[in-house]
Image (cartoon, rainbow, N blue to C red; front, side, top):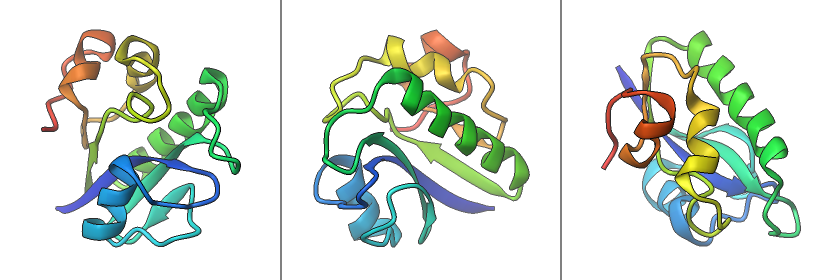
Length: 123
């Protein structure tokens, strides 16, 4: 099963810090791609093109699109980091519930488990 690294990004696709930098350096994420599949990664934006934190409803729309993508690709295993809980400044209780409907091929971070059910863990 193909492993995909799911990281928090910005809409400008500047992968300079946090999980976005990890995605660029180790998972083939391409600069300029701020949303969707890129290399062996998937970008979920938590910051806009000006590198300002997005609102929770804006982030949730992108999470919903990711969940649809994950459901459509059952042959892939998605390793989700605690998006939005680093540089974007949100807390797991704010982001975790957005992943409640994530399919079984998503490995969610332990920080999200209390808010979306036990879907596994991602170190």
